[in-house]
Image: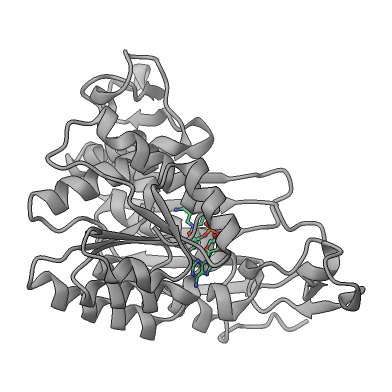
Length: 378
Ligand SMILES: NC(=O)c1ccc[n+]([C@@H]2O[C@H](COP(=O)([O-])OP(=O)(O)OC[C@H]3O[C@@H](n4cnc5c(N)ncnc54)[C@H](O)[C@@H]3O)[C@@H](O)[C@H]2O)c1
């Protein structure tokens, strides 16, 4: 695994757990983790359960006892690491968004396609697909329970940079992150809605906004450097992105991704309206699915709350008795479960790099559409 902070910790938890919960054709063995600071990566390896720590990801790729490279770094290094790993015959699991640009994503797809011809697999980590309620949502829609889809409504709302003094971390720098709320959390709802509907976005019209254009440098705000003083730097990504879209099955959709929804910490909500009913998912209630079945007698229609904890619900058979709920981290355990099973049985895990490139194309289209804007004349 490369990178050991937020996603590194989430992935480590999943790699530690996956074989203890699921009966899989292969075992994950946590061989080595890479970070750039020797002392910090050694501490992280001990804490997260990795046998060894290294300071250059190329060392991982050169080793014969490593089969999978798990990329948990910011987007500016995804392409370089993933392509080198695939060329060296390592299966790759890469965090989302796949890359910082369409060009990089296309190069990653080319490497993945070539690697696949010799049985080397790759996938992108859109973990919310693996929430059991989201999988159930997809299954119900695929079974035709809400008929033709008319509307998709998706929001992903956070508030962690509302304070203008929050420092200029890598997520606020285009050269490191590619984009802001758009690629970070907008990418999730793009993938999730395409996953549950089985439809792809064919066109968008969007707007992005950067509310706070200058922020304190990390060094200055942490008091790490006296010379940094009160220095600030330019925010080069969007704080919020909103767009409308058409999907190839005839649905229309709205999307909102923002880091300025004061009070909303990680508010991901998706609702789909169809000709026979509607289904909604809310990450803050991730064990539940809201279902409105309009085929019931009118007198009995109403929103029902399905508690997605039955043994025959997706992934849940391996966990606890019905009603004993699961959490955020389980989505990553399920991601590793699906990845291991696919790789061990010689199948392609999903979402593929091609799927993730399609998300990248949507991100790029939203960013470009920002240029076309119709002013309302007084
Ligand atoms: N699936 C999700 O829900 C989700 C959530 C958060 C982040 N992410 C994605 O995960 C990736 C990492 O985000 P994060 O939140 O974990 O960031 P983070 O800042 O918490 O961690 C990044 C890690 O990468 C390391 N790193 C950076 N460059 C490196 C290099 N060249 N070599 C080795 N290590 C390097 C850093 O030291 C750090 O350990 C991003 O692509 C992000 O979009 C996904």
